[in-house]
Length: 422
Length: 109
Image (cartoon, rainbow over all chains, first blue to last red; front, side, top):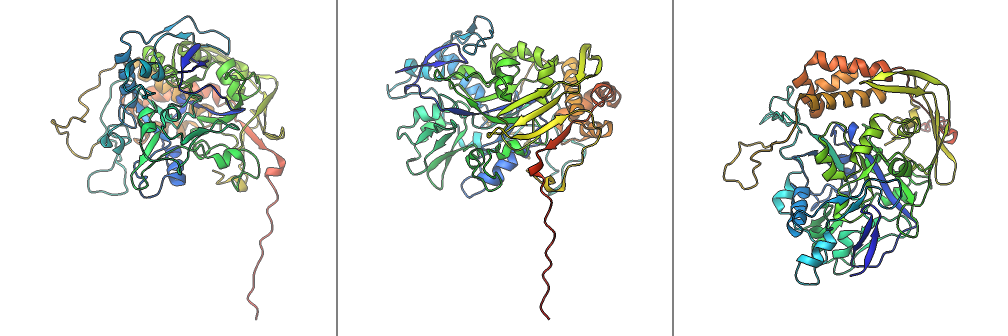
């Protein structure tokens, strides 16, 4: 099996195909600290792409309550368990988080889903360690989670007191998920018909419906369980990253790359999506003023989800501040402590970049900060806080300004033309 | 949330989750929500309403455990910092074209 470089793991790993990288890569950052599981993203995706017969169980975008929720149920616990079984006690990291673009979280010494497959699976043609979720696991995307339902026999009315909710005297948080459009997709690796491909222009992973024969190898292989089987067409389907919007060919886009539906619908403003430049070695090319590059490689507040799976996912998360660190380290790798520290005491530039979230539906390719005067200095939760009236300017693909934010004026009246812009 | 009572012989039934966590964790979570929504520009009444509503279970859980007064104090602390400014977003000029005047179609008499 060929080897490829995985910068998130800080080492080479086995992968069934030789490394090939797109010129730009679809990527996103979710700020979990803000998510309240309103499910607007979920419904935006559902109403756009998966509302047809045979797609009832499909939620390309979903929000699950961690640690006990999952769609499909227990997806992460199951694959973590399988990896532990394949490499008992060995799924650990060494070294320390560093500043380089290669191995910023140290080095992962354990086995990825590809490493483990070559050592533990038979026949030899098996390429990825995975499992096929049962129908029951797909059926109820939020079962046992904190989504209140109405009383029995009462339709279209939520429980007013929440009295039927179970009381969890413990921590939890909401994890919003879509396909990570991985750099080394496990679904692509597992497909015996090569029906899955990664687009060279934006790294979006697509599944060719004409080639698919519904073997479900992709469903079995994807450790994030974001490919799904459709019974009535006997093919598998997955998130397509709203590619007409990302291309700028959507009628609303007017030629400019737009963020996906789930991003645009986010009322909590937790999401930012973009296209990052990829270097020849597969790392992110230095692009200091791309907001995603800044959040991942400069501020180091956004971390990949389960990097140890080895697919080099392109979804990044600002981890929740209140959750016990061992759990977060397992989920986001060893960079968690630094990420939370940097987010809890944000730099002047990080505060400015966080203002870019959800100010526009257009993809931001570059930002620029015009520094303004200090407007406040004090403390919050025992930490020093400094606020500046900086102007943050966002630019689109063609270098034209998309919008600018300042922090001084007290009132913003949204123009009528944008009243329903999602 | 199941509609029916648990069935003990159902292998899919969740039997229990024991995890570390205490009041301080809940307090931290509530403080983060207060901070984040204050930064988003929500006012005191809006943030407290979010905590009170059962639909927003994370915030509501904290509100039930900590009580209205403790949550209100956190919200006030966050607003003391973040209420000092409102983010103003100015779109590119071309994004705001003057709306075309309405065209009235009259039935020919």
